[in-house]
Image (cartoon, rainbow, N blue to C red; front, side):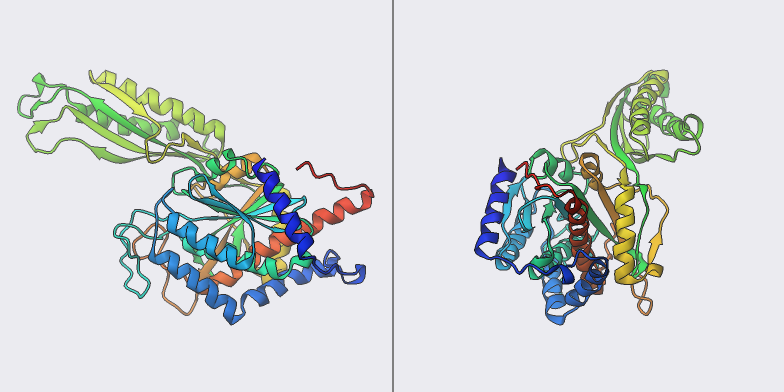
Length: 449
């Protein structure tokens, strides 16, 4: 119902502001026209006034980083820019999320996505637009992601005559462990989307290059917390205690066997214990120890198996040492049980190769190995075909950029027009190709909305 009303609104706008229909001889859906679109959009995105506009937005967002489901000021800024562009949208979606619409208001619907949340990191980069919120920082490039999707919206709005369908602009909260993508889907505003594209900045790749692959790209992931309880006492008389530190140590070692001795060597998996908290004095055995960590795999079946065995090992090893254990695979800040693997659609991969090659040159489009990092973009890919790629931002004449999730992470703002143009080109050419496939049937397009 929500999606239906929004589409009706877009249709009314189109009737009030009709766009010029190109003649068949100059139609952008021709093969030559499709090839020209990416370069044309990049040229538009590189105009000084457009670049300055995107840079300004990115810097405002960077100065005011907000954690997952707290992106109220970020969302307000995005809505202000959409209003200026004359783009209708739905808000709020999943607390702070926004879904905008550009195009005819009719099918097909193709989405482009930006995540909005920051990280609980204290920024150490000393510059004019440093984070003003203590302990919070855009250390993963989401400020740039938002700026690029807004840049794509500006490009699309200036080229409405080339949109043969509707581009859905997805501004999503809480990518950093909060499962914002899942909540956007649950809200029902993306039910009629046919495909979705997303990107992430890559500090180590040269600017002007992109990288991805078909099939599994990023691992699925889960979190675990465990409390191992024993009986505290004096360290000099351990026989009167039940030592949870010893039990927890055995648990950590045993968990490593899940990958080395139970997983197929050709099925990449990771189990890492990254938290070990117990005791506060050198001569006191504590009552309990808390451990926690993450597990990763490239298939949902492997994730489910790891989850099952992690709980069994923790409880079993604790019992061997006369301790008890509780295992939790969620918490109040990160309630999602399992994040699925990010798996790129093979047909969309071919589409990406064509568009990125036309824009940047085929030699700038790189194939990459899968990574054990995870992305909640994968939830979209479970609902409909999706494609996720990385965009390089390292200038060969500048010092090496720091990695994401570090306090000295920086963005090369020269990347913004590339990301905006890629988003707009991938969406526009997808719609044109979809139209060309439908045209020979001679039938009327049925809008289920």
